Image (cartoon, rainbow, N blue to C red; front, side):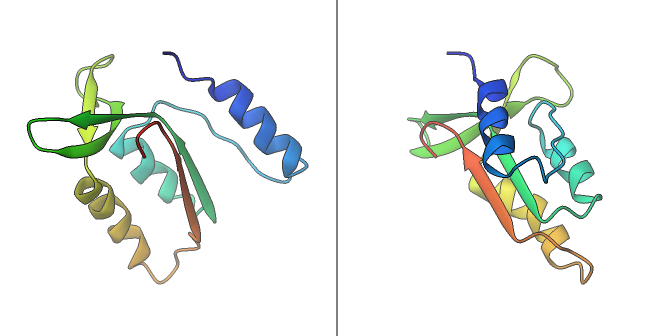
Length: 104
């Protein structure tokens, strides 16, 4: 099922009265790392979520950074590692990360 990110972002802009800067791109760990360099206060991630029966884990389905169009399974540990580099930065302004995904 395709994501309805345009509809989702229009609702966010409407509610926040366009007082925010929205940058849309494919969800990947590299994209998040790049965005964190802008020192955002809030980050909204919209992606698919999946369940891996063999490991009994839920994960976020991000775009594979090397094989465009393929899925990269992002576990909570991988996501935590990506954000921990930024959170430990004394200049970080990040206060909220919102994840919109099925199974999240």
